[in-house]
Image 1 (cartoon, rainbow, N blue to C red):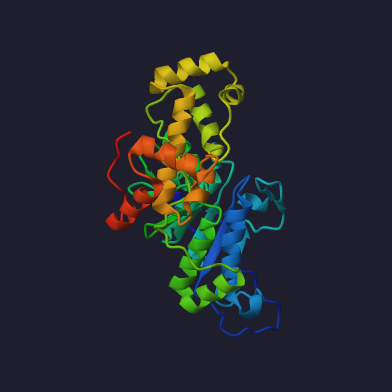
Image 2: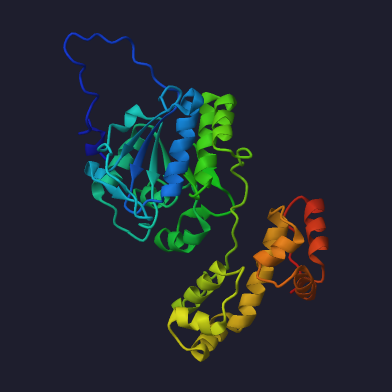
Length: 357
């Protein structure tokens, strides 16, 4: 850290042409530097930067008046998004002191446990200069690798929670929020949650009128609060070591609305249906089919607690043929109809007590 506190080797603002005498520089109230990592998620990056753009000027004209931004990458090299789109025009890593926030935009690179040392040093320098960091999507992994997430709660996408715990077992990561603000470190689940984080920052620095301006331009219903749960459900397999079970459950979670056959699950994992049966029995004390049924019912509970969707819509979302089939299976499992369960959640204004299986 001693070397990092020396004057940084980052470019300064270039001098104006001879004979030109500018007036005082106007500093926008919200300045964000974006650092793109390999295979970054385009939706999360685009949602956050576009929220800033639409709040920065009137009529979507994109002048950087009320908010400003710079897109950077290590060595100013092109960055390819996970969808294949390439951002070729980016700045090198600029002095972080010129920003209020440095947003690290990650994506499918989260399994890379050795980010370049120059990137990690840059993030440490930003923290030393009291510049707040933002982990966008899996950008939080890089911030954690830099050792800057200790004693803080971070928000990650539910789909990468297991990988985050594997890399950083001592850190506190949550998936029950869209984003988390720890003062000097903000983190969001990515995807559309990045828009909500952007609106949150705009409200803080530019006022609610500017945030509402962006909301209207983006044709949103409004800004979702950070405490809103991520629309997800996943099984806790922290005590399971068998990778085949992890792969099978992950496949089931992606297909809750269209449950795959056990033969298809076994093919996905790369084993026989009989081998999959034995693996589930040893690891979970249940067959793959019964575990999948329970997973769908638990997802239904989550939806009833957190979603305004109708009972029929939830039935289809959870892979049931119709509302009657869903209600029958739900009552057999929990002793309440879906409607009664939802009513109890509303009355209690929180998560209900565990129900008997």
